[in-house]
Image 1 (cartoon, each protein chain N blue to C red):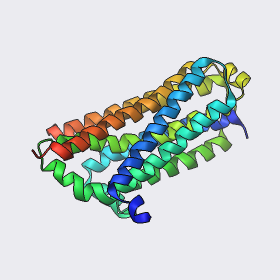
Image 2 (cartoon, rainbow over the protein chains, first blue to last red):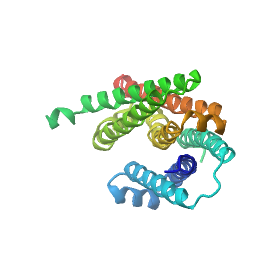
Image 3 (tube, each protein chain N blue to C red):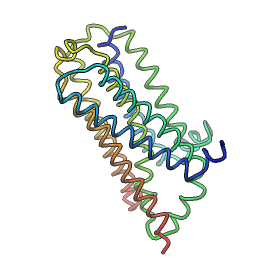
Length: 106
Length: 157
C-alpha cells in the first residue's frame, strides 16, 4: 500500500464529499423535486445525502489512489489545506443559507 | 434488549457519548502530534478510536433523527417560541455532521506514516489544524444539539 497516495486520494475525496453535501443540500432546499427524489431514495433526504457522500468518498478514494501519479509532500500539503478551507467554507455556507432561508432573504 | 437500546433516551445518550469519545480521542491525537514524539501506537489508536466513535455517534444519532426527531421533536420546536432552533441550527448541524467522517479517516491515514515519512512531508501544522477542525466541529455540533434540546424542552413555555 502506498501511504502517500492513500492520504492524497482521501484528502481530495474529502473535498469532493464536503462540496457535494453542501451543494446538494442547498439545491434540494430550493428545488422540491430534488428533495423528494432524495427522500424517495432511502426514505429520508438526510439518509440519502449521507449514503451518497460516503459512496462518493469511497469510490473517489479508490479511483484517485489508482490513477494518481507523482504524489509528493507539496501535493499532500496543498490538498490538506484545501480540505480545511473547503470544510470551513461549507459549514459557513450551510449556516448562512439556513439563516437566510429562515429569515426569508430568498 | 433491542427495545431498550433503540429507545429515544438511550439513542440520544449513545449519540452524545460516542461524540464525546470521538472529540476526546482527536484532542488526544492533537497532543500526540504537537508532542513531536510520533509514537505510532498512540497516534494510530487515538485516531482509530476517534473515527470509530464518530461513526457510532453518526449511526445512533442518525437512527434517532430519522425515526423519532422529525415526527416528535421537530413539530414541537417549530410550533414553539424558537422555531429557528430547527430551521437554522438543526438543519445546519445534521449536514455539517456528514463532513466529519471523511476528515477523521484522512487524519487516521496520516497516522500510518512512519516518523521519517511524516517529517519529510512537512505537514505537521496543517494536520494539527485538520485535527482541531474535526474536534472543533464535534464541539460546535454538540453545542447545537444542546440548543435544539433546550428549544424542545422549554420552547413552548
